[in-house]
View 1 (cartoon, protein in one colour):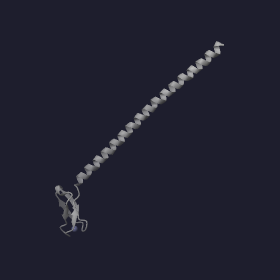
View 2 (cartoon, helix red, strand yellow):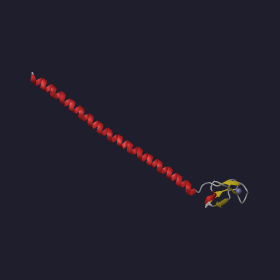
View 3 (cartoon, helix red, strand yellow):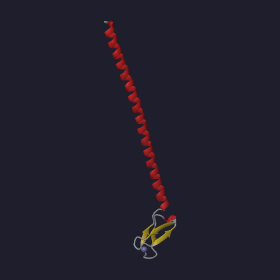
View 4 (tube, protein in one colour):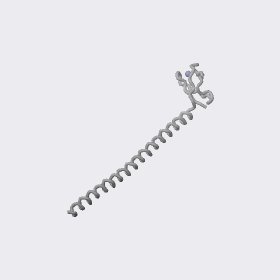
Amino acid sequence: MITIACRVCNTQMHVPDDQAGQMEKCPACDRLNDIPAPVEDHRKVERAFFDTSLQLQVRQADLLEKIRYELRWLSLWSKLVIGIIAISYLTGFLLWLFAK
Ligand SMILES: [Zn+2]
């Protein structure tokens, strides 16, 4: 059952769900009113939209987390590489110093 209010006189009308998308004549003022989809459907659509956006947000968060993780590894590796280069330079320098 869909409950609609007349746009002119605000009279409440109850129409079966299968009449959604059709027109209903107001019993009080004879004005034709659009029958919208049942409220439940709106909720379902909203719910689906909300779920989709939530999923997108989750996916985005996942991606950010992955990027953050990769960056952490990258910075760890770069630190390691820089450390190795620094140590080899230092050993080279020490060897050069003591070889004299
Ligand atoms: Zn009316």
